[in-house]
View 1 (cartoon, helix red, strand yellow):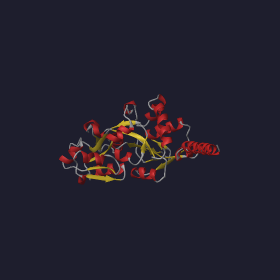
View 2 (cartoon, rainbow, N blue to C red):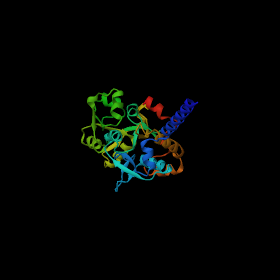
View 3 (cartoon, rainbow, N blue to C red):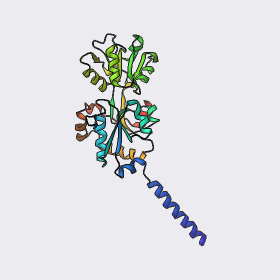
View 4 (cartoon, rainbow, N blue to C red):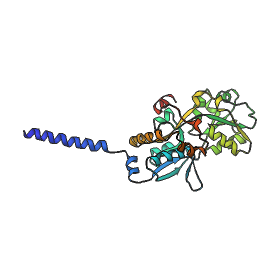
Length: 281
């Protein structure tokens, strides 16, 4: 009889222990619920995500993320601006808690971060000198016309170009979009590659020296879905974020918040899910 009581007590203690362990939330959930700031990391990528005059987070990816976080009850936000190439290493090193920088979901990135469900679908394009003197409209043109392409280190465009048969020797990689524009204007590169929004913004800032190619001229495989990224350990927060985003995405409130940054209904992500995108991009 005594042994039965001992076993019962042990079982009860084990149940309590397992219950406490299962109730233990991830680090970001605990930190946010304790009132600590949620640190969002992004680069200077107009109109996706960029700092304002007072370092406030601007851009449609930031606007959407902030709207979702607010709906979850979180308004204590701390922006952290870094180079594009420093976003994933910065997240992994704990410099910030979330990447809000408008990052494409790709298989290599899925190995390093946990993406939320997509918040938009976007295409890429090139900037070229006015008149497009080499007639560049797609990646094959870079190779066949002995041209040079420039893109930002860490962007998906270098890999996309090589998949389309472009020699690595014909691809320049630079730290920022400003340098992409400078390389094309100076003739060091014949085309600059990046997401269509960014390329249009560069063209607007060029004083008419460059123009943007048609994103539809690139293969369907170059269209990508964008999502907010988290540390892989922050599973509870990611789950809660996905639930909140599903309720917020596409609402009049959300569309109003992002419309000033060029995001429209046309960029809504459709039915694609992150698991499928990770396996196919």
